[in-house]
Image (cartoon, rainbow, N blue to C red):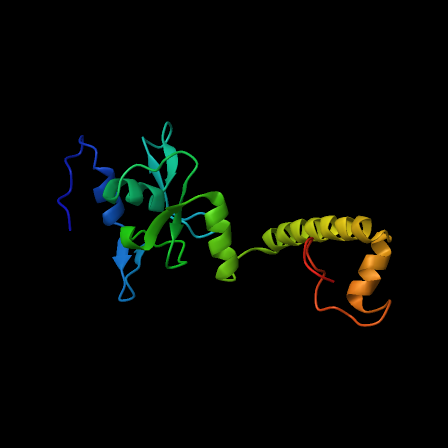
Length: 164
């Protein structure tokens, strides 16, 4: 694909990367070199002893698209970690990346637990506000919402300002 550099001349990063990718029919450019334990391509730049490992999809984004601003991640549209096709890559905040993972069902159990914790906390805050608003205990609000107390169960715990 590219001419080999002379023995003493370094090979440009872009050429090193492109020499190790396989272009597939689905559009993914799959990195065939070293990968992380999660499947993302890795490339050492700067020599065996002094070099540093780089994530290949980030380097490809920089080579083809441009710089990556601080605080942003390079995310995959194709959900294929070894893919380095710049057309499959986009920038997003860590929150954008997590939301993308959740929507596509790829979030780890740990991530789901973090969301569950946040949801429980918010429900607790709503329950506390309702208890204070109606002058009842939080356990009474929970029993009413679950249908275990008073007349009829509600489908959800209403938010402040809505009618009960």
